[in-house]
Length: 292
Ligand SMILES: [Zn+2]
Picture (cartoon, rainbow, N blue to C red):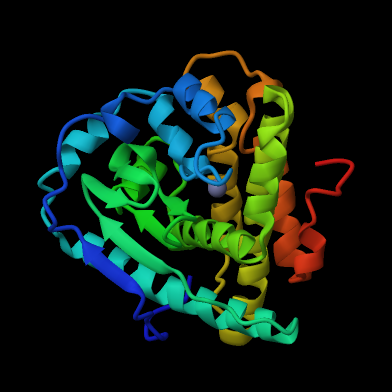
């Protein structure tokens, strides 16, 4: 990915030194397994947007010792480069979405990104590293612990800066859904839905965020030629690695389509592709798609 020297967002806050590295994993100090997360989702957790992204499910994928390393993580050169990458990618999403909203007669309100380590207080409760990156509709902030990228590289063999950019763009996708009122709509629909229907709606929301990430990539690349050879494959690889079916296999469980909350690997790849190939928001209507 070609990004060095590009504009950096002013909406990124560094909360890594805040001392929120307390013990306990997952929200509210409970340990989080895939089952817990599914239950939390079904319970209509915070406006219906899974605050724990696709990626959040990672915490259910195995032991969470990752978090313990995070508590007093030294600020290495490596993660300062990543911090800078976060600022550049967020700035890029600001430019792209501002333009897309304007073209549709709207105004894009920029989200903040809070980079933390350990734990952080959010309008959605205590966010923890083990949850992975997430978007909180309550405060319109994106939360990310850069150590998540180690997990992406090591456990999921999905390295690469563009894969990291895709993760950010997916979270920004949830913010766009929030601004469009889609998150509220889904949340309301989920209230009167069966568990199975509620999950199906969550999947559509997640796949749409993937498609929006693709839409961003299309426009960013047109304007700034950020994509290099192998980048798209890296992002698709990340999407594949963190599809629910892949995660469930990793955790040793059976793949159960009804409990999918983020979409299968193939679905995630398909919707990201739809976005990056067309660059059109209208192509991301997962809610009316007959086939995901
Ligand atoms: Zn998500």
